[in-house]
Image (cartoon, rainbow, N blue to C red; front, side, top):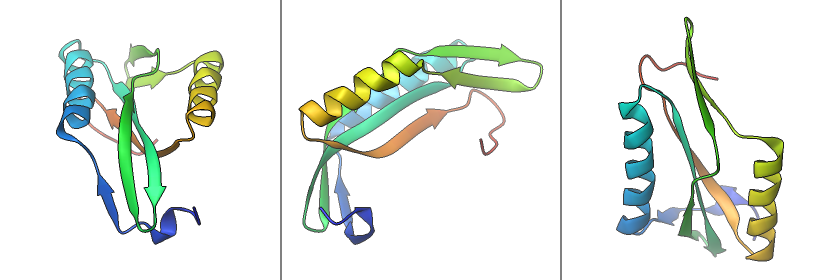
Length: 103
């Protein structure tokens, strides 16, 4: 793989879209932000998402809004899984429960 700059098309199976959507909707119903990842493999200019990863996470609310945190141990576990399964991340999906801002 020569990086994602050569990626022209990303294929995401419907069941993986729904897995991410279901998680994000569930945490949103509790007025929290959710976090999901799409992982897969590159073949030429095509990237094939093969897994929706929902890391263990903690949603937080404050007067300034919401955020979601993932522990260092969980990030390490996720990265180790990606390495062991020869996959790469292509997308990080987040869902603020209210007003969105760049973070």
